[in-house]
Image (cartoon, rainbow, N blue to C red):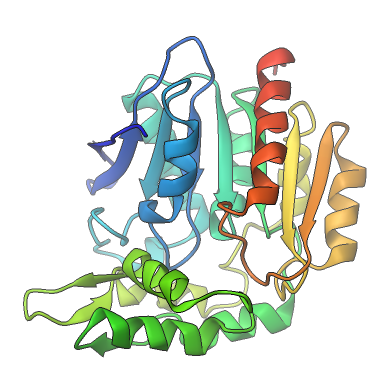
Length: 291
């Protein structure tokens, strides 16, 4: 399995941002992994280790998460700013064309990047997100994002994560919940287990309209010249089956994979996803598209 190294770059407003870079061959398209709202680069470690070696993989900590700096202005925690931060990363790492993998918020950022950087996304995986987000799912997320929690041990944190997500991953064991807790939480200086993000990311998200862009179907259309894989949790309260089907119909080269017993969102470490990702990467390598 490939090791990773820390990569830092600067945002346009002077924040020091962080990504994990897993090394790989220069003759294949690199993969850029963008996490969900409260998540970080650790979410992609299993996928990145599987793909790295033959190809380069970058897993990003969005501003306010993980090892990235917290924003001075919490109202900069919006998708357009995240997309601008990623554009700065691509310039810093001298990446021209790439395959984007975006979970939830990361998928929204991917769609925005497709419009900002025409022709540079060679393929995209949109994980349990689309141009329309279910109101019930948004309400659920607004109900927990930004709420402080601290635990004395990792097992306490794991049980709390299980309590909040048992319906999302009904088949998980305590080993899975403990691994998820270690992706979502960190150990602070006082020895407590705390959330690994700036609680102020909730401030703009609680304002309706800030969770995405103004016209996300138009943003999705910017991916028409690239192969796209849409992964959907069959229990998802964010991406409905009708919206996922409309996405596939709107894109000339798209595949839909539904994981029936998972909610929002699949981890992308599921065995069923591996072959679909490999097909996406093969299509992206075989069919380079001009802007």
